[in-house]
Image 1: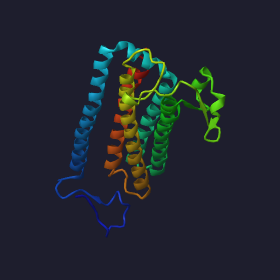
Image 2: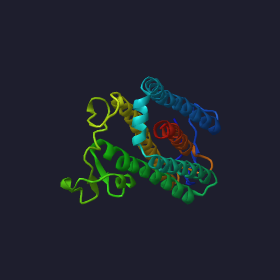
Image 3: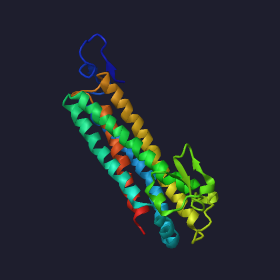
Image 4: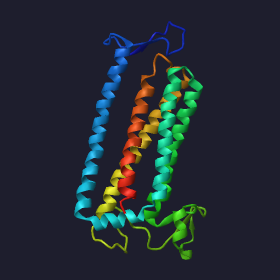
Length: 256
């Protein structure tokens, strides 16, 4: 168990004491990172199962995979990829600033990384899930220009959404209601799509929670040049989230 000596008036990161079961603070840091790397391998196994399912079903039903992928907008996927790549950079920079004692700059980069994660999830919900699930397009969705909104349905949520008749219903498994499917196995494609992207989005939200926690503790002086284990751990998790998306993006958006 790690402790902070309350009698010492120095900044929190300077008076951090490693756990009694570690010989040195450096040994504790290495142990924490090794343990987290082992945890990350379980995350790889989780997504590995999704990738295996993707490979098997794509081999069995290539036409369904081609049809499903053709509906996805690679520009939206590419924008989300750019957002996550930028967030990876700012996350790495924030760790560096913590290490050199520039806490305010580190917190600024951490908050930017947090908002990049929020932007990723927002784009996923507004431009991907909502129209495919329900047929309602966000009024700024560039894909809306390729469809004709149904005037009889009106505008939803104070005019922010437009309904396109016959577009929705692209749901997984037994929830599938899209009436213009060309392949009978198309529901399976959407099952894999939602499974992979929704679990990834959940990991983005978890990463955002970790980043917010690091941002808050950094503001209290917990992290600094001699103690930044929590920042490193959050950074490792965020980089894994980015790496998983690097694989999901071409597999889902570019195969057609």
